[in-house]
Structure formats: C-alpha cells, structure tokens
Amino acid sequence: MKEVAPMFAEARIPYGTWGSSFFPAWQMSALAEVNIGQFAGEAMNRIMGIRKVPTSVLEYLIIGSTIPWHWKFWTAPLVASCMGRRIPGYHMEQACATGLQAVISAAAEVQSGSNSVVGVLTFDRTSDSPVGVFPERRAYQRTVPLSDVWDNFGFDPATGKAMIACAGKAARKHKCDRREVDELAFHRYEQYFGAKASGFLDRILVPLDVLNIQGRFLGRIDSDVGVRQVTMGGLRAMRELDSCVTPGTQTHASDGMATLLIADKAKAVELSPRPEIDIQIVAKAEVRTLPSLMPEAPTLAVQKLLARTGLTMADMVVVKNHNPFAVNDVIFAKVFGYDWRNMNTTGCPLVWGHPQGSTLTRVIIEALEEAVSLGGGYVLIFGCAAGDIGIAAIFKVAERGDQR
Image 1 (cartoon, one colour):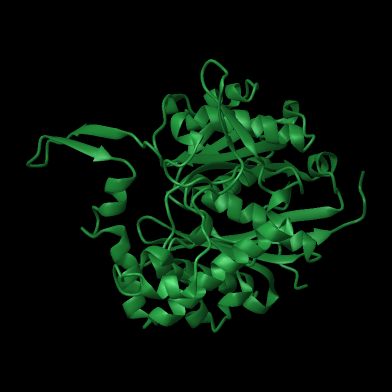
Image 2 (cartoon, helix red, strand yellow):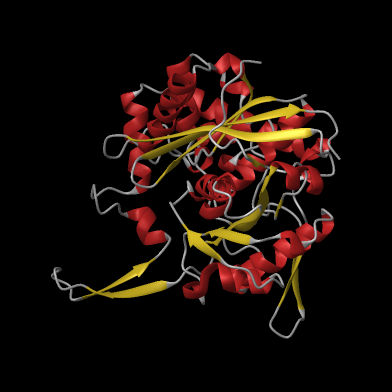
C-alpha cells in the first residue's frame, strides 16, 4: 500500500462503534410522525449501547441535518440531552455533503486537542418537512412561503432551474447513453439486494422502535421501506423525464439517521471491539462546477483529490458514492475509464434513498465495514451537493498490533 500522510494524524474512527437506522422512504414509516432530532439522539444512545460504548466517554457532539426540525435552534446540546448526555456541540450542514463534512469537522476537533472523543450524528426527515414564510422586501411577492424539501428540489435560485435539470444537462454534456444508465441502475439494485441477502447490512443497520410522546409504540424501523426489486424491462419502459433520467434512475426522498465516533489514537484502541483495526482520514477535496452540472462535480473532486495525494483508482480497495442520479456514476466511469460494476458493491443512495444529512454518513460506514472485510486498504468516498458542489475523501483502513 502506498503511504500518504493523513490530514489528521491524531484522529481515528474506532472500528465497530458506528451504526445507522434503516432509511424508510418519504411518508412510509413512523419516522414521519416524530421529531427527528429527538429520535436521532435517542437512536444514537441505543446504538452506542448495542456497540458497548458508554456514552459517558463522549466529550463533544457534532450533528448534521439540512431540513428544519422542531427546536433546531438548540441544535447539538438538545440532541445530546435526548441521548442522556449534557455535553456541548454544534450543528452544521452542507446539503448532501453534510455527512462527510461532519466527520471531517469532528476529526479536526480531535486533531486540535480540544476533545479526545467526538460523536458524529447526522439525520434528516424529508417526510412532512416544514413550510416557512419569509418576508421578502426585494420581491414582487411581499411574503414568500417555501416548502423546504420540494421547493428547493424544484428550483435552484442561482440558476433558475430544477434539480432534475442538472442530471439531464450533465448527461448530454458527457454523451451518456440511456441504455447504459438503465443497466447501471439495475446493477445497483442487484448489489443492494445481494448485500442484504448476505447479511452484510445487518452489521451496520440497527432496527429501532419509534415511540410517541407518551412512550407508546408507533412503529419499528427495520427495513429500507420503499426499496423494491426492479427489472430491466421495467426500467426500459419508464418515461424519460430528462435526458437519461427516469423515475427508476434517480433516488427517492427518505428519513433516517447515522452515527459514528472520532477519537484520538488511545481512545480509539480503548473503544473499538477490534483495536487492531486503524482507520484514518487521508485527504479531502471539494470543487464547484459550472451551473446545473452537479452530477459531474464529484468526478472533478476525485480528480483533484487523486492529483493532490498521488494515489490512483488502482489504489482503492473500496469505491462508494452518494449518487442521487445514475448519471453520476456513468459520468465518473467515463471520465476515469473505471468499471462502474466495481463500485457501490453493497448498495448506495440511488437505491436506498436520500435523507440528505445522513446519506454520506451511511455511505462511509458501509464502505469502511466493507474495507475491513477485504483486509484493509484505501477507501474512496465522494458525492454531490446542492450548488453544483462535489466532495471527495480518502480513508485508510489498516491493521496494527493489538494495543490494548
């Protein structure tokens, strides 16, 4: 394995101290009925208990979400209280890059020496997202209502275009073929259901009960509700909404949370059930591409990242991304000459959904778990975000002598 100096020499992700809820689709589970911030805090507490990590070790909490939720003003301190801890922290967001940015921010906290164990908790509920009313003195319409999820998906104020338009425009620029896009989407579903059947997802996803304010049972979140097996014939028959984009080749809105820990070297060894596994963050890169070309931005971010580190795609043992459109993966494969069958081997957001804040966190957890099962190596994570942003990061999974 080529050696590249990590960007945070002191920070580690303790193996096996992570977990994610399942991601039920919009309005299809009890998560649509509850305060997602409160649920996320309680769920993190439950996951840490299952992983045998005492929450008393947490010194700081970084949460990430993108959709307003009740009492969001209080951010991380409130969420920490919901998990039974009175610790400080803060909230951050960058659309669908939030999950990765929260991990980077937590690693910076540890690297600075400010805290030795930082919890990362990301979540979002697209179901029943709020409608805000904004006084707008520079618009013809004095009072402007905004449905946070659907209106933002439907209109980019910087370009005047809908989100879906960026996929069609990028597909035309890169001369994507509808047949290949359909084939890729079908393969992504096969990968997800294969990982599910093998039991791989059971190592990451945690069934969670949802209770109402009286403590009564509302439902159990124990599957990615809304994900259905597709057929090639069914994908081929779907109407094209824009160039190479159909309902079957784009993701769907969903709800969920995902969590992991960042710790210094000593605490990572102490907290992990397998202390011989060493996980570091090697490097990160971001780019902003031209207007309405978001699906190509992650590819540009990976180019920048590899150029900076001197690593190549051949050095990556796991490649996984946030792909709201199948077009994202086709563009990446075309630019790098990379076989898209070799990435997202355990599933991806194209299939299991898009709760925004927690999407890339689940991607990271799945990718690191896969890398451990393969014996370690470099892990490439990348994705896109609103504003034609691309983000990419490389993690390194290695084994060291038992340091307990």
